[in-house]
Image (cartoon, rainbow, N blue to C red; front, side, top):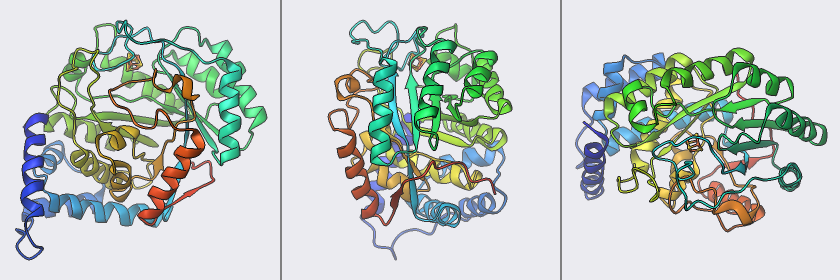
Length: 377
Ligand code: SF4
C-alpha cells in the first residue's frame, strides 16, 4: 500500500474507532499481536514482518505498541525528556532536494547566515535557560569550512565545557567529519530520508546518492560520533515496503539517535501539492523504533507538532524522549522554512521552553537540565 492509501485508511479507522466503546472494539488480529510480541522480545523483525506491521496499522495496534514503547523508555530514561537547543546557522544550501523549502532553486527564499558571534550568543542564552546540548543545523553552505567550524566548535567548548554539540550540516568528507570530531563535536545528525535507493532518487537530484548518504553515516559512526539517521513519514511515493526498509536499516545500523517526522509540503518545491504525512503513522513508527532500539534518543519533532497541535505530546507518549526547542534568533526563524507553516517561529527561546515544559508536565513528563547522552546498556 502506498503512503496515500495508508493515510486514507488511518483517517477512516480513526473515525470508526473513536465511535466504538472499548467493549465493542474488535480484537486485534492475532498475527499482528504476535508480531508486536516478537518485536518486544527480540527487537527484530524480517522485512516482510515490518511491512505487515505497517500495513496492519489500527488505532488499537498503535495503543498496544505505544504502551510497550513507553514502558521500555520509562525503564531506561524514566519520565525525563531531554532538550536540545536548535540553532539554524544558515539557510544557504548548494543542494536542490525536491522536498526542501530551502533548496537552492527556491528563489523566493530569503537567505541568511549567522555569524560566529550570533551563534555564540544563541548558545549563551540557551545555557542560561538550562540547555546542555546545542544542535548546529544548516544547509550545505560552503562558507562553513572545516577551519571556520573548528574555530566555532572550540569557542563553544571553551565557553560551555559541560555541553554537547550536535552538528547537522549534511554530507561532508570523512576528513572533514574527523576534523570536526577532533575539534569537539559530539554528535552528528544526517537523515538518510529513505532506505530505498530508487525512492531516494525520486526525492533527490542526481548529484546526491543513497550510497554516499549511507557511506557518510558509516563514517560518522566509525569516527566515534553519537550518530543519528532518520526519515520522513508519508514522503512522496513512499510505500509500506519503503518504511519497512527504513526500519530494517535502523535495526542493522543501530544509530544512537533517530529523527523521524511527517512529510510536510513546502509550496515552493516540486512536491508542493503532495498531501502531508500523518501524526498517527509517525507515532506508530516512533513506538516501533523504540522497541527496535530501546536506548535510542528519539525526538518528538517540530514537524510532528506542526501537523498536530498535540503532536509532540503524542510523540512522547509513543516512546520518544527528546524535544528540540528553537534557539535561533527570531529575526531568522521564518527564513529557515523547510516546510510550510512551521510552528514556533515567532516565540522567544524562553517562551518556547516554558511552553514545552508545560506540555510535557501535562502528560506527566519532566524536562531536565542534562546533556542527555545516549544510554549504553
Ligand atoms: S534537505 Fe538539506 S541538503 Fe537538501 S536542499 Fe534542504 S538543506 Fe539542502
